[in-house]
Image (tube, rainbow, N blue to C red; front, top):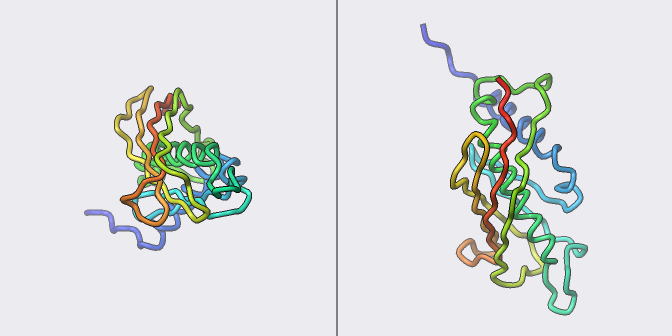
Length: 164
């Protein structure tokens, strides 16, 4: 006898709760105002514009450090999401589960392709390789048009040990 599928609302609530737990692990995201938008298993980093994020008021342009941080946390969220996806779908990630451990950055190289304009920015990461100990991620950021990137980065991360 096969198990009945869970109602879609229960699945959505579990996924949203798990993503909230991941985001709470990175207080710097709240400081910068970075949000994570989830559609199914795809995550998009969103950096809503704020005057405090401007590094060069003469242009004006987003601060390079803000851009790098935005790319890095988007990469970390994508890696972490991929790590917890199977456990979450199996119902193993709960409020009583051990604290989620995030990957640690080994190196992170940013290519600044153009100035970040004073408007909302978006980023998506793609995991190139993920093993038990090491992962490689590429992340791209854009503003008005996804085909016109303003920054991209490649990062290498040390993966946390898996429980179990």
